[in-house]
Length: 551
Image (cartoon, rainbow, N blue to C red; front, side, top):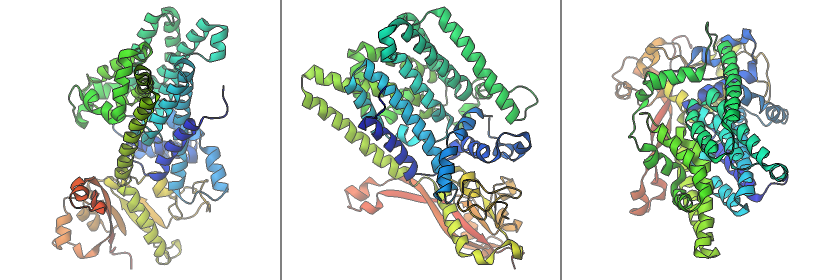
């Protein structure tokens, strides 16, 4: 195996890392894994610490497995230790970025593994084009470092696909039949684990690949069934034992089975929205792949290898289409396969026309389109984390006011964090891993610099979702808070803006964190106002209250 990376492999790593660094904020979809990862980093797995895990208070609609965040927490520990000792982690945002960079790096390595299998089977040019197209796409690189369950399973899917494509070269030369069978079975074992522990919808991808390999004679039914039984037993045992303990249930718990029953059998997933039957084919895949769908279709028609790779993926998407609730993340696993086919289509187009120049022009056109979509996507996404922006503003504001609040005079600052802020960037890393925000009875995160172990909190963040605190009027009447991060769309804002609400004079808006509201193409095309291209709207307001006990 080549140890020195190709330039296009380095390009993938850099692209994935850049998306994490440029947009460090997170959304609510990432919160369970992200917060569980922090809990594992700080508290380990001892029973006496489980009460302080974030999921105890905010458990979510359905339980998710703790196995992925436990594995994720074990990976960045050396990087956090080195960065902490070097004084590079100033606050929780830096620590959060390191955790996400590790996940992005794992996903990039999985793609590189897949590309090297493509190189040994399809050729160096197709492998190179696969990586270049993958690095310049928007959605997969942007989400590769985000802790949604789909992207935790994504590296495993890429590895499994690589194992399906070809065996290692040296083993293939010695015992080609044995190498093919062994790697195919290993791929199915990995995909089984990913499905049963992380995302159960991957069973709909595993079954078509299994049928295809059986029909092709790559594996026999008995050995495939045996591998499936062993992998299923090991995966279920791991998930049930770990998650029953950490969720503290009185009966055995299999999170993915519970989620399947809740979302599919009971049909609760439709509460999150219903999409047309062809949504994945007409909207999600074009959104994920853009113009790469064209050469992928060309390759599908002309290249038997592409058909073998894409047919199970198409069946998978068709099976997902039977569910009413649809999200592009559920179909993201097929992007690498379509990208390989797109690379093959570009190479095939060059061979079909007999022109290397046309082949290069086709590649440049796709890369140019990808970069355009990536620039627009990154521009929009950078405005989509008002919760993080609001916390950052308040942190700086309180740093300037630090002399007025201290444990010595008994005046810690109490801040209520609203739902909108929590959904758009105010993670536990961001809130609690900064100077002066140590929760009661907790040691400050060991990776922070400087580290003040056992410090008393002078800023107390309250993330309560009590109905009485869901409005600005309720927060103001409670008299408990000095500051609050409030949804700018709260129903009673108009009363406070006009001064008609009781206590309106005690509320002062310090900052409005905006969120993305669309692109104004007419401002650029018709009026030449480039600065007005990105439209925003207020999302989270930082407000200050005059507490009756603050004097």
